[in-house]
Amino acid sequence: MLEEEPAAAVALFGDRIALARSYTASLAEHGETLGLIGPRELPQLWSRHILNSALVAPLLHGRVGDVGSGAGLPGLVLAIARPDVELTLIEPMERRTDWLQSEVDRMGLTNVTVLRARAEELHGSGLLKPLDQITARAVSALRTLIPLTAPLVRSGGQLVLLKGGRAEEEIAAAQKVIRKHRLHDVEVLDLGAGHGLDTTRVVRAVVDP
Image (cartoon, rainbow, N blue to C red):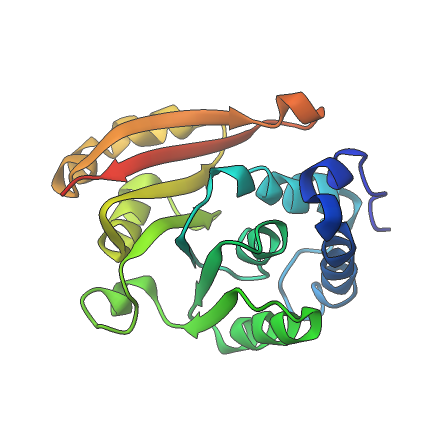
């Protein structure tokens, strides 16, 4: 059974709440069949996935890429919450890009581009202009994720990566790639406490010139 909408949803989405509800309902209806979410996710779909993603929205600006968008977490959620931000959803699997594009069309989102590709295929390809920021959720450990994402960001841009409780350990294990890709101001942000939600942990870093 789909989780009841938490009170924080309206606070996080504001006048975009109807779109957030529409997307959540669509994901609940089709997600398991399409292999986008597991069978145990419905009782926590709002709190663990939708709002977990939406907490990142205030950190965004400009042109943002989402690597490994999958079901649209966090990319579609962020596009709903921040219509002023231009989102490019990067996903290699055709059935997932088909789903993402169908949701973009169904909801009439005009700030989203769906791009079927692996992140590493875009490095230096000219297919994607350098981004202001890039995000990813549940893709891989930082030592693997940073080489995939950092080359897609402009000089002075940011990585805004959703991580779990071991964020500091991942940062420690990724020091070599952090130096190689000239990241600085690496920090861990804990989001969600003010909304009565479980903590969403974000690793944010600036890509040096």
